[in-house]
Image (cartoon, rainbow, N blue to C red; front, side):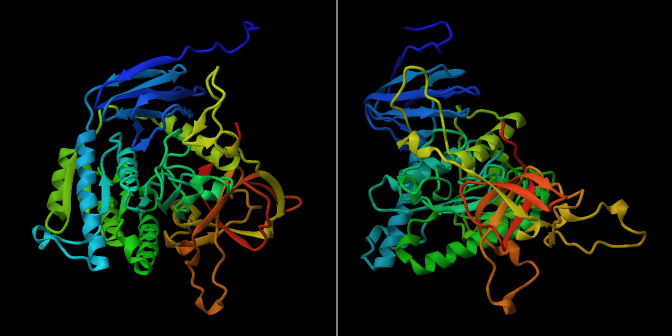
Length: 490
């Protein structure tokens, strides 16, 4: 028997979509949505929906259900915005996918030594290495997901690499990282907490999504302008790892890669600012041969002028469904991502829904139990990189110059009043080289990321601190780097 305090059950609503149209929705904080494909064919950013299965969306997700041939969907929940649009750029995106697919086929044909059709005798056989650039609110990440999902759905066994060099988004890890992962299956969209799907580093090992094994480096800040030299180095580190992998797997190389970039790469006050250096770093590191410009005529002209002689530059329109995001929303997404890293992705289904899934995964499979551990100050070495560790210029003695470069790791003492470690996000790095003769000052910059910790308490008297970790383990002798991100449980 229902009472007045029960959450009201929202009546399911049916939407009949015509061919090449999409149902767009936006969610408010604390709300969720359940969508079931009743009949026909439908997809969410290239991820195909199974008929009669219930898919959940939450954490202020903003997405669209698109259909090529028409479909009927059942929607349960109350989104803040919902409507159907018959004007989408999906046909243009599909044509771009077909062009990239042809590049993959030619590259694989060359690897296998297969005969080349006469009409393609002069065509290049490089696999697609795509750099997607565009201004803020242009939908770059969505386009990267669509192109990646179409590639893995093509039925050719492709495993494209998806690269994220937007530290404000975080990809598969927490914000502040740059990362890459080979994608073997379609990437779902369910929540802003996992924009590129769930990775094995923060989910139970039984999940199918654990085929996503990202390689990540810790940059530590949301804006690339905070330390462009460090951002350049992280980008080139990713590229070196990618090229090493491709040399060992020529057939895998044919699948190519797609690079998602921050909006700061698309606009700047002058032609000589840091963004051009970072774009060049991407082009060099990932051997880019295709630049996709999303919805920005001036940027397209700039890319054509700078790179059109050697690379293919393609301009595509942005979707009319792209939502403008403010800074408070981005702050909430950062909170969602960090909470999901430690506790798993939990979305409470709308009232009346009991069998929903997140991107095909069971709700119970996505719950984690983090541990709180007390460690000694000297159990773990904590670094801060570059300018964040520097004293203010006016605090230096008269005539003195800085002795710390933008790239120099500086050890942080937790007992220092200015350590700023309480509630800080620590990036736990892979072990350093065991060969002491190979040590160098900036070695920590080239160590990959293995996980995150949060410092929840510092006791200077006992020289101990409490850290929150996704699972139990010893941190003695480990190395960590702190950036500008902080997090507190709400």
